Length: 254
Image (cartoon, rainbow, N blue to C red; front, side, top):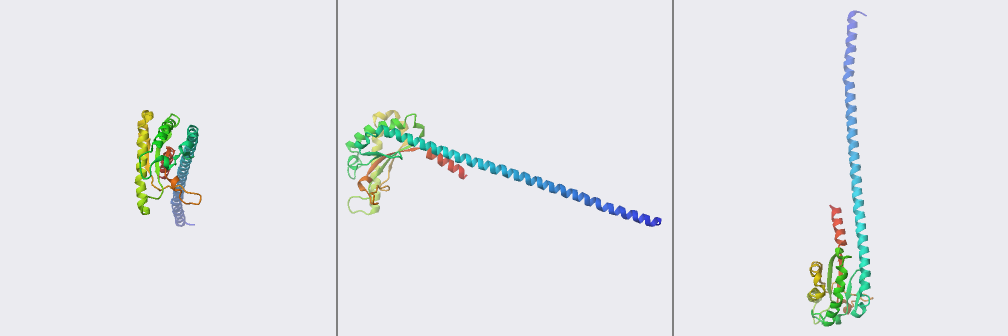
């Protein structure tokens, strides 16, 4: 091999080496890019995992909170029922009244309550409320339950009929007006009792009068309306557990 051939061979070798150096750099760069992508992907996966765990923990916390509130509500309701029953069990029969598990004390003897179509309390019902209500307030406004009472509702209910030739709609609206007037009369009477004067401010903030017309009739076993039983006045207690559960549910939907 002469000198000219040796020079061409050396030049060819240099060109080959110049070709493989950039390719090696390219592979190294691609490897670094792949590693960077892998790291970014793993970071994103880890972030998503932590976010999912946080969301699951938050959901479990809200679920447990709702369970605690519901359990507390059930406990308070049961305790309150027992205390009301202990206080009034001997009086309810002579008052023609009943106490339900839903904490409703129902006065369901229309002949005792009001004259037909009238909203003025009969004397017998006034006497009953004068005995009943101060004892009722003593339980609800006492330290045991005071902080858990959201509302004390006086509900007025009527039958579906109205005297005379009236349509069902007209009877409903007339009974609505009558039931509202009756509950207002009952509310005014109990709030002005001297025995509850020291609780008047608290009662004014918690008591409501609700005329419901014939929207919740009492039924006989055969499904027909019991018109006499439908004409009633109820004292109901609503605790703040319902409001707290509602707040939790609203927060969960956000």
